[in-house]
Length: 249
Image (cartoon, rainbow, N blue to C red):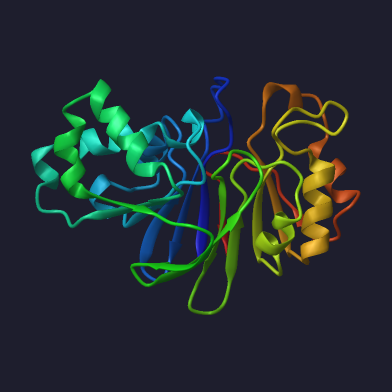
């Protein structure tokens, strides 16, 4: 399994950090976790064209995690993609309604719908194109999901999406080889609806995760040693997310 950070930033523009997005390459498939604005461009920098993306998982429907869904549907209208197979888009309740509302604003997106298989899922065990995954409810919005993605060797990459400190994160990150976790604000200045390095590190420690990757950094993080804050409470490896940074599991 290979995990590449496509976006480690937020809705606040940063020239070095695009909003949320991750590429998981496993079992011969390429799966995107979240589609923040610009993530498709980052994916292209990794050699992905729209016809080489196999599936998309959305953690929730805040704009900085899903805005490129509209760009994806519009891009697939290009004649070069007319023969591609249907692209599964998985997310919690509200996915279809969100797309319907996007199509009201941009009616031409409705024509791109034929390329998308919009699948609303709940917490539990799922599979997409042979890739096993677990969806776990996390606390952020009413329908936020974190994901555990497994490979054929039993390696696990876990993604919190946005989250507040909650017990569900322990189940999400249990024995994970890689835990990519919302760490949006420094411990000294916590923000609403997100986590700090201390909170992420504690949950990773409780879960027995092997490698913690703090991500989703707001500008308030600048000047703080986020890695040291996480290491103070977590015995495993810590690597701060950077756009286009890749991990081999």
